[in-house]
Amino acid sequence: MDLTHRPRRLRQDRVRGLVSETRLEPSDLIAPVFVDATTDERRPIESMPGHERVPIDDAVARVEEVRETGVEAVMLFGIPESKDPEGRRAWAEDGVVQEAVRRITDATDAYVITDVCLCEYTDHGHCGPLEDGLRTDDDHGPARDPTLTVDNDATLESLERIAVSHAAAGADMVAPSGMMDGMVAAIRTALDREGHEHVPIMSYAAKYESAFYGPFRDAADGAPAFGNRRHYQMDPANAREALREVRLDVEQGADVLMVKPALPYLDIVGTVRREFDHPVAAYNVSGEYAMLHAAAEKGWLDLEAVALESLLSIKRAGADLILTYFAEDVAERL
Ligand code: PBG
Figure: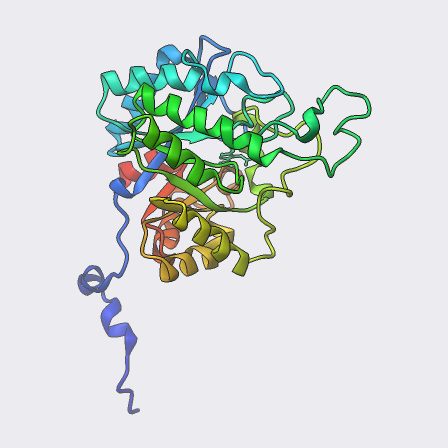
């Protein structure tokens, strides 16, 4: 038997670490945190076991729990005490995220990233005000016409206000997730104008219209009341389009490029990694978390093992940072 090449030589236990290509660290991970202005006690999120919506008074404690695991960065989502067609609570100075950011940055050294979007703040659940000023409750309105969608340019003005209000409250980084055309340029210009030129933008650059967001929409109370988001989020069929989307965000000044979801879109993560030299983030979304938990609950998968393998694979595909609901569990074991 003449076997010159025996890859198994390097799979022996004592050498595996030396030749390992990918290493996952707690500093790669960002933990999503939900702050809820409608409650004064913690509320478990049923479809995301282990996660809760916390009241504003518990925001600091929640972030300290995250930091105890070694994870330094959080992504904040807010559930406002009231909603309206424009989502005005999203940029209120006393809004839920603004208040939570002030408290967290006063009390901790956490790196605080905020989600900049309107879907949790509009009563119709879309990521911006609707075209033509039509309201969800109009009888002849959008509920009947699924082609009616978000008014892109009006949304940009709101996103500017939201981003500036988050930065003014002390946010370290802002992350626009609404997939509006021109959102990065609008936010960059507004931040610079208001003296926040040091606040980076992590753009949800290639965000797909994905059914894997289901549990999040329960968690953040942001499901669209009618229709879906396919007129602004990307078609899962498209990969080349993702490059065009990402390139636009680069041209507009995005600092970090995010692909979302992660596991079903690792080809996109890999391509963005190769084509651009910016840091690449991947969002391991709620559905990716929920399905592993559900299978583990049935005894069909080993949760710790599949969680770790998922995050390692996302990193191997090219992500530098990973947003994940597994952040705390995995960081504790690294
Ligand atoms: C929109 C937003 C969504 C998620 C993050 N930001 C939901 C959506 O587009 O419907 C989803 C995250 C997840 O599923 O974990 N503000």
